[in-house]
Length: 103
Image (cartoon, rainbow, N blue to C red; front, side):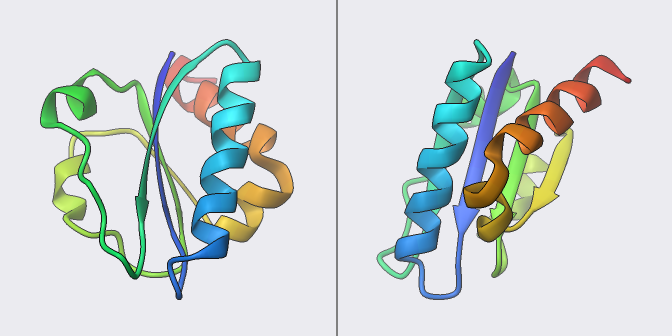
């Protein structure tokens, strides 16, 4: 499965990157491909439209608004927070798997 994760916290520093790392580890441990876009105080580097189109599911782990959210209008989305991603990224990956499989 191909997963995109977008992480963003109020200050855009610690929790943004901690959530990104946790989601990357959990997705890879489950055998999935994963790409993460961190959005923070220093800005962000948007993932390509082609990559977004290829993704089976998108995980939003955010406390603040996602920039250019309309890029994901046609995507299956799991909504969460950075804190939840840090605490139990595996559960978010499981939720994404269930969403994609229709379970």
